Length: 173
Ligand SMILES: Cc1cc2nc3c(=O)[nH]c(=O)nc-3n(C[C@H](O)[C@H](O)[C@H](O)COP(=O)(O)O)c2cc1C
Image (cartoon, rainbow, N blue to C red):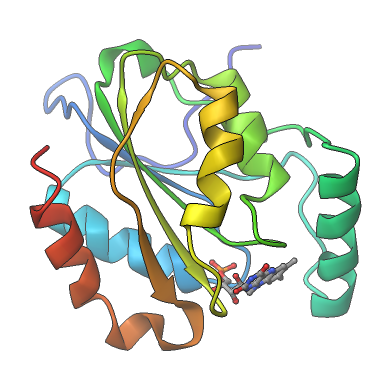
């Protein structure tokens, strides 16, 4: 069965956008950031979601995330993005999990070829930098051009959204 997009802000047949905002968010901070970014860039919008939802219990998800990272696991995606090849620039957002991108984001990168595309990464965290995540993403997508990234304080995401405006404006995309 062909997978369907999770959520789209645009009707692609009548209003094609060349850029998607793609986001994984567990507790909502990165989703808030992604929605703000999407207002700026007016892009198609996709949520990255696992086929088997993560537990909503914090202590449990901390353990699950560490186990997935230790195993370099690739949890299955609920859905993939249609017409991925038509996009040239991707905004990719996620929370920092154990100083790296969540493994579900790596599954997403495996499943969506980024060679020749610009990938602009933003994340929210409790203090870690998005930069600590880029090494593993570059290894998965060596043919992508990763732009400067930005990190938002997760707990203060709502009050730091203007950082995204400044960051996006400076990318020259
Ligand atoms: C499993 C897990 C691992 C985390 N690891 C880190 C980390 O390594 N560094 C950090 O600064 N914050 C870490 N955090 C905090 C989150 O990055 C932060 O709360 C983020 O804003 C959550 O985004 P979300 O609401 O979009 O899921 C972790 C949180 C969880 C649940």
